[in-house]
Length: 108
Image 1 (cartoon, rainbow, N blue to C red):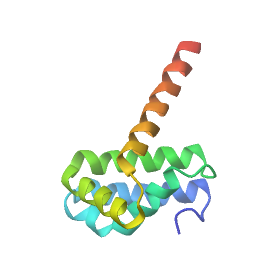
Image 2: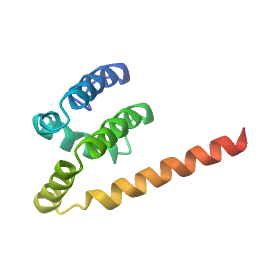
Image 3: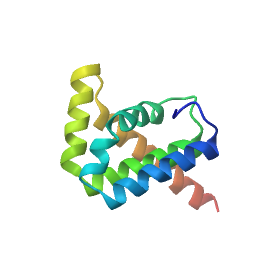
């Protein structure tokens, strides 16, 4: 369903997932594994709107903070199955996001 709904629909879906991870930091990400994999692919998609990417980033950061061991296992699993290195891409995405925000605030 993610990737096939409008921005407000994506926001509602991701906020529900966010709540699940917030209340169940150990079990929540495990239950959402397929969706987290989908979110990682959408995060790096050029077609996905920035507002959706912001929601995805928020959820992924919560997973990383609340259950870092699980996230490392998930990233390793994705790397083995798809031959894609997730962590360097995620770091690059985060650095670009921070760099963009700095430029935005300097221009204000």
